[in-house]
Picture 1 (tube, rainbow, N blue to C red):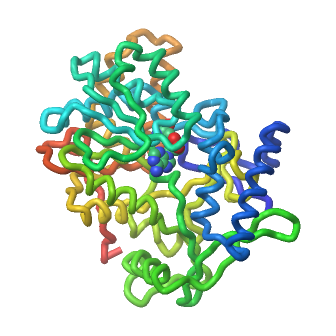
Picture 2: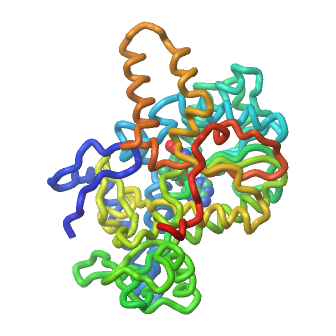
Picture 3: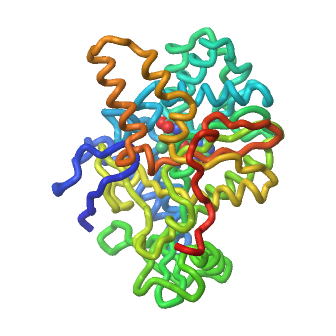
Length: 414
Ligand SMILES: C[S@@+](CC[C@H](N)C(=O)[O-])C[C@H]1O[C@@H](n2cnc3c(N)ncnc32)[C@H](O)[C@@H]1O
């Protein structure tokens, strides 16, 4: 299939418009073929079909070969996409302001999930240290061994005096106290796909093609999955109303399970989950009939998850209503949900910008354009949201206090 190019949320892709995607170098192409052979083997062993979540897990996380497990450069201008902490240190500085605020009622510790290049960790540690609030411990949970190494190198360069406070966890601690931070981690968790057609729910999985590639293959959903789909889309569509024709979308089961586990283990403290997504009514809007699955390859966004397995990112937007419900079902409190733009502004973005280098130098111009990308509604400002979850910490919640609250529940009048 020739991939359709469209504008995606991870920064703004530089290229939209036609043209083939760039060919990978020979060694990378060889690694991708090796991963494809492993995936084909997994499909064969499963009887010819695997769920899309299994395919996505293999393509992203298979040791040595998966996209996040392999050593290639992913983040920043030379990679496949740009994330907020990569774009500007101001993102981390604003998050640091929120953490410092919480350190009043939660222990001064941070747990970061999926720390990528380590840019957010470096900025949080440096900014908190600068105001005398350096956390006593900074723990990173990172599934990729190569990214752990990269994070360690960056932190050794940027905050050498604080490196001794940083540790990498192999497993999640049974009890979490402090502030949990995750930027663009939920969207990287494997999703299950479904196709709703005339009231019948199919699970969309992956099969091998005779030509040696992969293709989507649908089969009737089991009762539990069909019920989960109905419970997710029903409130968004309204009673007895269903879109005509095929409706394809995702269920982020793993992301919801992960939020529930974290919320359960959060004994005292708060969680900040940044990602692109919507509340349920928008996520499963009848017009969004092809879902939100996207692939990122060298700053181009397209819709073909079977292209060069292991060399491109595969991602889906986040159903924030599902995440909020998961946190609440584990007994934690949702203390805020707003856009990234509102959160950053409430955490003092404007003041931080005005404190920067006062001359109209090149660095100041660059900083200003990065800030615009962080808050511009057409770029990261509106599509990116922040969900705040807490247990045992006292209000007010800096990033959410002056922010326009967004609704998480579908509005029956829509
Ligand atoms: C899109 S990257 C974001 C990286 C970084 N947070 C940033 O903003 O630049 C997704 C990250 O999530 C990590 N990840 C995915 N699932 C995870 C999990 N269950 N636990 C911890 N990290 C995870 C990936 O390895 C990767 O580092």
